[in-house]
Amino acid sequence: MASNRLRAANAAKQEEDKMDMSPMIDMVFLLLLFFLVVSNPKTIKIDPDVTPPIASAARTPKSKYGKIVVNIHENGDLRAENFNVTLDDPDALEAYITRSKDDAERVGHVARLHIRGDQNTIFKYCRKVIRVAARVGVTEVAFGGYINDK
Image (cartoon, rainbow, N blue to C red; front, side, top):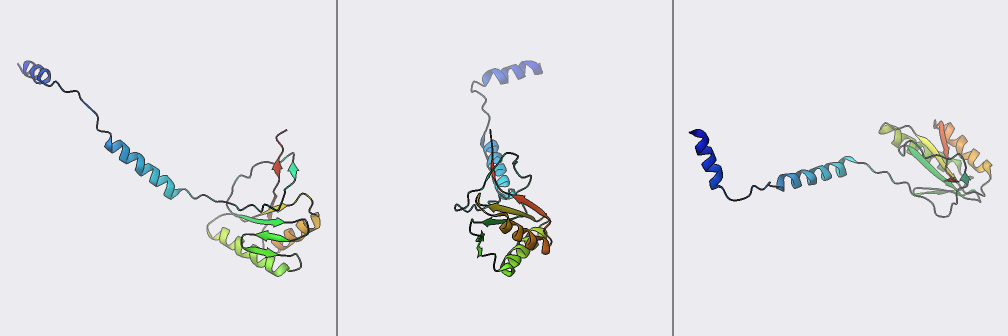
C-alpha cells in the first residue's frame, strides 16, 4: 500500500527537477577570491637600457624570491629598484644589497644576487658588484641572459 502512495505522489508531480546552481557559483567565487588573496606574485622590473647576452646554457631560475637585481650598463652605471649609482660609490651599493638581503631573509628567503649585465659590459664591473655582495654575506650569484632556443 505504501508503494501505491509513493507511485501516486510521484505521478502527480509533473514539473521537471532542477538543480540550484547558486551555491556552486558562490563556491567558485570564494575559491577565486581565496587564490587571489593567497598568491603572492613577484614582479622584477627589467631595465630596458640593458641588453643581456644570449646564453646557450641558460635556464630559468628555480625561485623568483630573494633576488637582489642589479642592472649593469655598458659604462659601469648600476641601476636597480629606486637605486642609481656608479661603481665609484661602493657604499651606496653595499647599503642597497644589505637592505635587500635583510628584507629577503626576514621573510625566510635565501638572498641571491641577480646580475643583469649588458652584453657589452666589461666583467670587471660585475666582479666589483659580486665582491660587494660577498662582503655583506650574499653568496649566491646568478647572471641574467636570454635563453638560446636553438
